[in-house]
Image 1 (cartoon, rainbow, N blue to C red):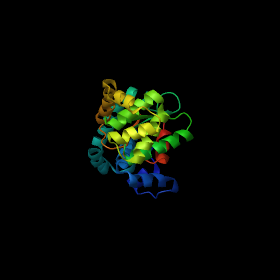
Image 2: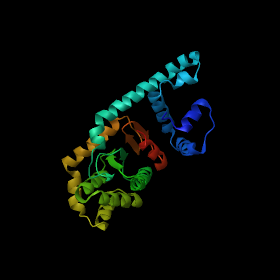
Image 3: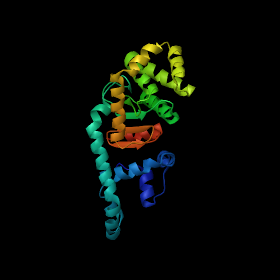
Image 4: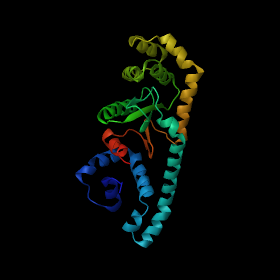
Length: 244
């Protein structure tokens, strides 16, 4: 059974064990997570209600939970349809070679996005075979510059740029040019590349994926069988990534 202890405890009034504490903390931090866990549980364990509830309660529950089953089927269908673009290897990603196991939708000058990326960098370092791909949820200039730097100078250089921008907290043209110069880049050349139609088209496509998945929160995580809106602790993500 794939449901975490915290979710089962909340459903059936069981006492929480120490191993459930990370999930309990995650539920408190991210209000979207409980709904995602419940939906996954009902999708993967459709008989669990029948074993836990009397027939009358089960019939009432079907009316309540059937829409959730439908929603998760829709989510899985959307992820499958976009999986090639979501998880393919690009210069924006980091970690092991090969297809990514997680895509992070992010944007510049976003504290929670920076936190999510930093934690995923640490998780990748601790998890052999794990690759993460970054996708932009906006076509703003800072994100276009990050995209261009990744393709011209590599993922590490793009990460340095994002870190500097997030630390500065300013994204006007002068501030961005200053950051680029301080990192040894040519601001004018990168600005031309960032404004090129090909760059705009690429980030427009990434933002379109974000919207097509029904996401509305920065950051958001996409795995082959799950969407998570909002920041999620790496400890919890590692458990999801370990699932078959």
